[in-house]
Length: 378
Image (cartoon, rainbow, N blue to C red):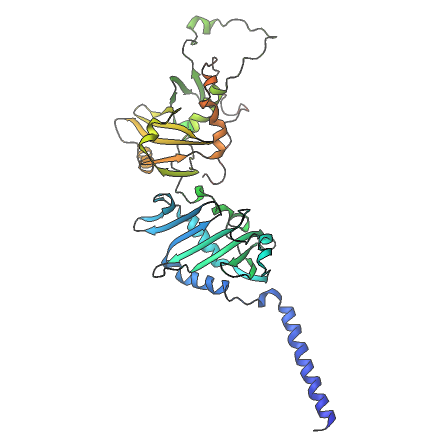
Protein backbone atom coordinates (compact mmCIF):
# COMPACT_ATOMS: atom_id res chain seq x y z
CA UNK A 1 0.00 0.00 0.00
CA UNK A 2 1.55 3.24 -1.12
CA UNK A 3 1.77 6.36 1.02
CA UNK A 4 -0.91 8.36 -0.82
CA UNK A 5 -3.49 5.65 -0.26
CA UNK A 6 -2.70 5.48 3.46
CA UNK A 7 -3.01 9.25 3.67
CA UNK A 8 -6.44 9.17 2.04
CA UNK A 9 -7.63 6.52 4.50
CA UNK A 10 -6.40 8.58 7.47
CA UNK A 11 -8.09 11.72 6.15
CA UNK A 12 -11.36 9.82 5.68
CA UNK A 13 -11.19 8.41 9.21
CA UNK A 14 -10.55 11.84 10.73
CA UNK A 15 -13.46 13.27 8.72
CA UNK A 16 -15.84 10.58 10.04
CA UNK A 17 -14.75 11.24 13.63
CA UNK A 18 -15.24 15.00 13.24
CA UNK A 19 -18.72 14.50 11.73
CA UNK A 20 -19.77 12.22 14.60
CA UNK A 21 -18.48 14.73 17.18
CA UNK A 22 -20.37 17.60 15.52
CA UNK A 23 -23.61 15.61 15.39
CA UNK A 24 -23.31 14.67 19.04
CA UNK A 25 -22.67 18.30 19.98
CA UNK A 26 -25.68 19.49 17.97
CA UNK A 27 -27.90 16.87 19.58
CA UNK A 28 -27.22 18.40 23.01
CA UNK A 29 -29.27 17.37 26.06
CA UNK A 30 -31.74 15.31 24.05
CA UNK A 31 -29.07 12.61 23.64
CA UNK A 32 -28.67 12.14 27.41
CA UNK A 33 -28.92 8.47 28.26
CA UNK A 34 -32.39 7.85 29.72
CA UNK A 35 -31.36 4.71 31.60
CA UNK A 36 -31.63 4.52 35.37
CA UNK A 37 -34.18 7.17 36.27
CA UNK A 38 -35.63 6.91 32.77
CA UNK A 39 -36.20 3.17 33.12
CA UNK A 40 -37.90 3.74 36.46
CA UNK A 41 -40.32 6.18 34.89
CA UNK A 42 -41.13 3.79 32.05
CA UNK A 43 -41.81 1.03 34.54
CA UNK A 44 -43.91 3.39 36.61
CA UNK A 45 -46.10 4.27 33.63
CA UNK A 46 -46.65 0.59 32.87
CA UNK A 47 -47.32 -0.31 36.50
CA UNK A 48 -49.49 2.71 37.36
CA UNK A 49 -52.72 0.65 37.60
CA UNK A 50 -51.01 -1.65 40.13
CA UNK A 51 -49.57 1.06 42.39
CA UNK A 52 -50.74 0.43 45.94
CA UNK A 53 -48.58 2.71 48.09
CA UNK A 54 -46.77 6.05 47.85
CA UNK A 55 -44.38 7.45 50.43
CA UNK A 56 -42.91 10.92 50.80
CA UNK A 57 -40.29 11.79 53.39
CA UNK A 58 -39.53 15.48 53.87
CA UNK A 59 -36.84 14.99 56.48
CA UNK A 60 -39.19 15.78 59.37
CA UNK A 61 -41.85 13.15 58.85
CA UNK A 62 -42.74 10.35 56.50
CA UNK A 63 -46.13 10.39 54.83
CA UNK A 64 -47.44 7.06 53.53
CA UNK A 65 -50.66 6.49 51.63
CA UNK A 66 -51.96 3.04 50.71
CA UNK A 67 -54.75 1.88 48.43
CA UNK A 68 -57.31 -0.32 50.17
CA UNK A 69 -60.66 -1.84 49.35
CA UNK A 70 -62.42 1.45 50.18
CA UNK A 71 -59.95 3.78 48.49
CA UNK A 72 -56.73 5.50 49.52
CA UNK A 73 -55.91 6.10 53.18
CA UNK A 74 -53.01 7.79 54.99
CA UNK A 75 -51.59 4.90 56.98
CA UNK A 76 -49.14 7.24 58.72
CA UNK A 77 -52.26 8.85 60.24
CA UNK A 78 -54.08 5.73 61.43
CA UNK A 79 -55.92 5.26 58.14
CA UNK A 80 -57.59 8.65 57.72
CA UNK A 81 -58.91 8.96 54.14
CA UNK A 82 -56.35 10.28 51.68
CA UNK A 83 -56.85 12.86 48.95
CA UNK A 84 -56.60 10.92 45.65
CA UNK A 85 -55.74 14.07 43.70
CA UNK A 86 -52.44 14.45 45.57
CA UNK A 87 -51.40 10.86 44.85
CA UNK A 88 -52.32 11.23 41.19
CA UNK A 89 -50.33 14.47 41.00
CA UNK A 90 -47.22 12.82 42.43
CA UNK A 91 -47.42 9.72 40.19
CA UNK A 92 -48.19 11.65 37.01
CA UNK A 93 -45.41 14.08 37.80
CA UNK A 94 -42.89 11.27 38.23
CA UNK A 95 -43.96 9.68 34.95
CA UNK A 96 -43.46 13.02 33.17
CA UNK A 97 -39.83 13.44 34.30
CA UNK A 98 -37.18 13.14 31.59
CA UNK A 99 -33.44 13.64 31.98
CA UNK A 100 -32.09 16.72 30.25
CA UNK A 101 -28.64 17.28 31.75
CA UNK A 102 -26.08 15.35 33.76
CA UNK A 103 -25.26 17.13 37.03
CA UNK A 104 -22.80 16.43 39.83
CA UNK A 105 -21.94 12.92 40.99
CA UNK A 106 -20.03 14.16 44.04
CA UNK A 107 -21.93 13.48 47.29
CA UNK A 108 -20.41 16.55 48.98
CA UNK A 109 -22.08 18.74 46.33
CA UNK A 110 -25.53 17.14 46.43
CA UNK A 111 -26.74 19.75 48.91
CA UNK A 112 -26.23 22.45 46.26
CA UNK A 113 -29.09 20.89 44.29
CA UNK A 114 -31.06 19.82 47.38
CA UNK A 115 -30.62 16.15 46.48
CA UNK A 116 -28.58 15.24 49.58
CA UNK A 117 -30.06 12.54 51.80
CA UNK A 118 -30.32 12.78 54.71
CA UNK A 119 -30.62 16.53 54.32
CA UNK A 120 -29.96 18.76 57.34
CA UNK A 121 -31.70 21.69 55.62
CA UNK A 122 -34.78 19.54 54.97
CA UNK A 123 -35.06 20.79 51.40
CA UNK A 124 -34.90 17.34 49.80
CA UNK A 125 -37.81 14.97 49.36
CA UNK A 126 -37.52 11.21 49.15
CA UNK A 127 -40.31 9.61 47.14
CA UNK A 128 -40.94 5.88 47.04
CA UNK A 129 -43.64 4.16 45.00
CA UNK A 130 -44.75 0.55 45.55
CA UNK A 131 -46.78 -1.78 43.35
CA UNK A 132 -48.65 -5.04 43.86
CA UNK A 133 -46.41 -8.08 43.91
CA UNK A 134 -43.23 -6.18 44.84
CA UNK A 135 -41.87 -5.74 48.35
CA UNK A 136 -39.25 -3.28 47.10
CA UNK A 137 -40.17 0.16 45.72
CA UNK A 138 -40.43 0.42 41.96
CA UNK A 139 -39.29 4.05 42.28
CA UNK A 140 -36.98 5.44 44.96
CA UNK A 141 -35.88 8.99 44.18
CA UNK A 142 -34.44 12.02 45.94
CA UNK A 143 -36.18 15.10 44.55
CA UNK A 144 -34.38 18.39 44.93
CA UNK A 145 -34.69 22.03 43.99
CA UNK A 146 -36.95 23.22 41.17
CA UNK A 147 -35.41 24.80 38.08
CA UNK A 148 -36.87 27.09 35.46
CA UNK A 149 -37.00 27.47 31.66
CA UNK A 150 -38.06 24.83 30.93
CA UNK A 151 -39.67 23.79 34.19
CA UNK A 152 -37.92 20.93 35.86
CA UNK A 153 -36.32 19.62 39.01
CA UNK A 154 -33.04 18.11 40.18
CA UNK A 155 -33.31 14.37 40.84
CA UNK A 156 -31.11 11.55 42.05
CA UNK A 157 -31.88 7.89 42.41
CA UNK A 158 -31.57 6.89 46.06
CA UNK A 159 -28.29 5.03 46.37
CA UNK A 160 -26.86 6.62 43.19
CA UNK A 161 -24.32 9.42 43.32
CA UNK A 162 -25.13 10.73 39.85
CA UNK A 163 -27.70 13.53 39.87
CA UNK A 164 -29.71 14.91 36.96
CA UNK A 165 -31.60 17.92 35.81
CA UNK A 166 -34.96 16.59 34.69
CA UNK A 167 -37.65 18.31 32.67
CA UNK A 168 -41.19 17.91 33.97
CA UNK A 169 -43.44 19.10 36.75
CA UNK A 170 -44.17 17.35 40.02
CA UNK A 171 -46.46 20.02 41.41
CA UNK A 172 -46.90 23.76 41.80
CA UNK A 173 -43.84 25.64 40.61
CA UNK A 174 -42.31 22.50 39.09
CA UNK A 175 -41.15 21.03 42.39
CA UNK A 176 -42.82 18.69 44.84
CA UNK A 177 -43.69 21.45 47.31
CA UNK A 178 -47.45 21.27 46.80
CA UNK A 179 -47.47 17.70 48.13
CA UNK A 180 -44.86 18.08 50.88
CA UNK A 181 -47.22 18.93 53.74
CA UNK A 182 -49.50 16.54 55.57
CA UNK A 183 -52.55 18.71 54.91
CA UNK A 184 -52.30 18.12 51.16
CA UNK A 185 -52.58 14.34 51.69
CA UNK A 186 -55.62 14.43 53.98
CA UNK A 187 -59.07 14.20 52.41
CA UNK A 188 -60.86 17.48 52.84
CA UNK A 189 -62.21 19.94 53.46
CA UNK A 190 -63.81 18.16 56.39
CA UNK A 191 -66.39 20.92 56.78
CA UNK A 192 -67.64 23.58 54.40
CA UNK A 193 -70.38 25.62 56.07
CA UNK A 194 -69.98 29.30 55.26
CA UNK A 195 -70.80 32.02 57.80
CA UNK A 196 -73.91 32.80 55.76
CA UNK A 197 -75.19 29.27 56.44
CA UNK A 198 -75.13 29.77 60.22
CA UNK A 199 -77.80 31.46 62.31
CA UNK A 200 -75.97 31.90 65.60
CA UNK A 201 -72.87 30.97 67.55
CA UNK A 202 -72.71 30.30 71.31
CA UNK A 203 -69.36 30.59 73.06
CA UNK A 204 -68.45 30.77 76.74
CA UNK A 205 -71.92 31.95 77.74
CA UNK A 206 -71.98 34.55 75.01
CA UNK A 207 -74.11 34.48 71.89
CA UNK A 208 -73.45 35.85 68.43
CA UNK A 209 -76.34 36.29 66.05
CA UNK A 210 -76.51 37.12 62.38
CA UNK A 211 -79.07 39.44 60.89
CA UNK A 212 -79.00 40.94 57.41
CA UNK A 213 -75.48 39.60 56.89
CA UNK A 214 -74.11 41.15 60.10
CA UNK A 215 -72.74 39.38 63.19
CA UNK A 216 -73.00 40.93 66.64
CA UNK A 217 -72.17 39.76 70.15
CA UNK A 218 -74.94 39.91 72.73
CA UNK A 219 -73.13 40.84 75.94
CA UNK A 220 -74.94 39.91 79.21
CA UNK A 221 -75.81 42.90 81.39
CA UNK A 222 -75.11 45.34 78.60
CA UNK A 223 -78.22 44.86 76.46
CA UNK A 224 -79.79 48.25 75.82
CA UNK A 225 -83.38 48.86 76.79
CA UNK A 226 -85.89 49.91 74.11
CA UNK A 227 -85.92 53.50 75.37
CA UNK A 228 -82.15 53.70 75.18
CA UNK A 229 -82.20 52.40 71.64
CA UNK A 230 -84.85 54.93 70.64
CA UNK A 231 -83.14 57.80 72.47
CA UNK A 232 -79.42 57.03 72.47
CA UNK A 233 -77.25 59.31 74.61
CA UNK A 234 -75.36 62.06 72.83
CA UNK A 235 -71.85 61.10 71.79
CA UNK A 236 -68.92 63.31 72.69
CA UNK A 237 -67.10 63.92 69.40
CA UNK A 238 -63.87 64.47 71.30
CA UNK A 239 -64.13 61.26 73.28
CA UNK A 240 -61.54 58.57 72.46
CA UNK A 241 -62.82 55.58 70.50
CA UNK A 242 -64.24 52.68 72.49
CA UNK A 243 -61.53 50.30 73.59
CA UNK A 244 -61.29 47.24 71.39
CA UNK A 245 -61.60 43.86 73.00
CA UNK A 246 -59.39 41.13 71.51
CA UNK A 247 -61.67 38.33 72.68
CA UNK A 248 -64.81 39.88 71.21
CA UNK A 249 -63.01 40.71 67.97
CA UNK A 250 -61.62 37.19 67.76
CA UNK A 251 -65.11 35.75 68.28
CA UNK A 252 -66.61 37.80 65.49
CA UNK A 253 -63.65 37.31 63.18
CA UNK A 254 -63.16 33.55 63.59
CA UNK A 255 -66.03 31.53 65.04
CA UNK A 256 -68.61 32.10 62.28
CA UNK A 257 -65.94 30.91 59.82
CA UNK A 258 -64.79 27.90 61.84
CA UNK A 259 -66.42 25.37 59.50
CA UNK A 260 -65.78 27.28 56.29
CA UNK A 261 -63.48 25.35 53.94
CA UNK A 262 -61.80 23.63 56.90
CA UNK A 263 -58.79 21.69 55.58
CA UNK A 264 -56.98 20.27 58.64
CA UNK A 265 -53.24 20.65 58.92
CA UNK A 266 -53.00 17.31 60.71
CA UNK A 267 -55.25 14.63 62.22
CA UNK A 268 -55.11 11.88 64.84
CA UNK A 269 -57.44 9.43 66.53
CA UNK A 270 -59.55 10.85 69.33
CA UNK A 271 -58.41 10.01 72.86
CA UNK A 272 -60.61 9.89 76.01
CA UNK A 273 -58.61 12.71 77.62
CA UNK A 274 -59.40 15.06 74.72
CA UNK A 275 -62.85 15.76 76.19
CA UNK A 276 -61.33 16.85 79.50
CA UNK A 277 -58.37 18.79 78.17
CA UNK A 278 -57.57 21.84 80.36
CA UNK A 279 -58.38 25.30 79.04
CA UNK A 280 -60.81 23.77 76.58
CA UNK A 281 -63.22 26.05 74.72
CA UNK A 282 -66.74 24.99 73.81
CA UNK A 283 -68.46 26.46 70.77
CA UNK A 284 -71.97 25.65 69.50
CA UNK A 285 -72.69 26.63 65.92
CA UNK A 286 -76.36 26.64 64.94
CA UNK A 287 -76.99 25.84 61.30
CA UNK A 288 -80.76 26.13 61.55
CA UNK A 289 -83.54 25.76 64.11
CA UNK A 290 -83.07 21.98 64.21
CA UNK A 291 -79.33 21.37 63.74
CA UNK A 292 -76.19 22.43 65.60
CA UNK A 293 -72.50 21.51 65.61
CA UNK A 294 -70.52 21.16 68.84
CA UNK A 295 -66.85 22.19 68.59
CA UNK A 296 -64.28 21.69 71.35
CA UNK A 297 -60.98 23.55 70.94
CA UNK A 298 -57.80 23.26 73.00
CA UNK A 299 -54.11 24.09 72.71
CA UNK A 300 -51.22 21.65 72.57
CA UNK A 301 -48.09 23.75 72.55
CA UNK A 302 -48.56 26.36 69.86
CA UNK A 303 -51.09 24.27 67.96
CA UNK A 304 -54.87 24.40 68.31
CA UNK A 305 -56.82 21.16 67.98
CA UNK A 306 -60.56 20.77 67.52
CA UNK A 307 -63.10 18.00 67.98
CA UNK A 308 -66.29 18.33 65.93
CA UNK A 309 -69.56 16.49 66.45
CA UNK A 310 -73.25 16.99 65.61
CA UNK A 311 -75.07 18.70 68.48
CA UNK A 312 -78.83 19.05 68.89
CA UNK A 313 -80.34 17.61 65.73
CA UNK A 314 -84.06 17.10 65.29
CA UNK A 315 -86.53 16.83 62.45
CA UNK A 316 -85.32 15.97 58.98
CA UNK A 317 -81.68 15.08 58.54
CA UNK A 318 -79.37 17.75 57.18
CA UNK A 319 -77.62 15.94 54.31
CA UNK A 320 -74.58 18.20 54.32
CA UNK A 321 -74.12 17.87 58.07
CA UNK A 322 -74.59 14.09 57.96
CA UNK A 323 -71.86 13.75 55.32
CA UNK A 324 -69.43 15.96 57.24
CA UNK A 325 -70.12 14.24 60.57
CA UNK A 326 -69.14 10.90 59.06
CA UNK A 327 -65.64 12.32 58.53
CA UNK A 328 -65.45 13.71 62.07
CA UNK A 329 -66.39 10.57 63.96
CA UNK A 330 -63.44 9.29 66.01
CA UNK A 331 -60.96 11.99 64.92
CA UNK A 332 -59.56 15.29 66.17
CA UNK A 333 -58.08 17.88 63.82
CA UNK A 334 -55.25 20.37 63.95
CA UNK A 335 -56.35 23.84 62.94
CA UNK A 336 -54.37 25.37 60.05
CA UNK A 337 -51.50 27.42 61.42
CA UNK A 338 -52.69 30.53 59.59
CA UNK A 339 -55.85 30.46 61.74
CA UNK A 340 -54.06 29.98 65.05
CA UNK A 341 -53.10 33.62 65.49
CA UNK A 342 -56.71 34.73 65.06
CA UNK A 343 -57.98 32.17 67.59
CA UNK A 344 -55.32 32.73 70.29
CA UNK A 345 -57.17 35.65 71.99
CA UNK A 346 -60.03 33.27 72.82
CA UNK A 347 -57.67 31.37 75.15
CA UNK A 348 -56.46 34.45 77.01
CA UNK A 349 -58.23 34.91 80.36
CA UNK A 350 -57.52 38.64 80.38
CA UNK A 351 -60.18 39.21 77.76
CA UNK A 352 -63.07 37.76 79.76
CA UNK A 353 -65.01 41.02 80.12
CA UNK A 354 -66.48 42.22 76.87
CA UNK A 355 -67.37 45.74 75.85
CA UNK A 356 -70.67 46.30 74.05
CA UNK A 357 -70.45 44.95 70.55
CA UNK A 358 -71.29 46.73 67.36
CA UNK A 359 -72.48 44.47 64.57
CA UNK A 360 -70.06 43.51 61.86
CA UNK A 361 -70.31 45.65 58.78
CA UNK A 362 -72.40 44.28 55.94
CA UNK A 363 -70.85 43.20 52.69
CA UNK A 364 -69.48 46.09 50.66
CA UNK A 365 -68.77 48.29 53.68
CA UNK A 366 -65.00 48.00 53.29
CA UNK A 367 -64.47 45.82 56.37
CA UNK A 368 -63.23 42.34 55.65
CA UNK A 369 -63.71 38.90 57.15
CA UNK A 370 -60.58 36.94 58.07
CA UNK A 371 -58.25 36.26 55.15
CA UNK A 372 -59.32 33.47 52.84
CA UNK A 373 -57.75 30.09 53.30
CA UNK A 374 -54.58 29.43 51.30
CA UNK A 375 -54.84 27.51 48.01
CA UNK A 376 -54.42 24.23 49.86
CA UNK A 377 -57.80 24.79 51.44
CA UNK A 378 -60.35 24.58 48.72
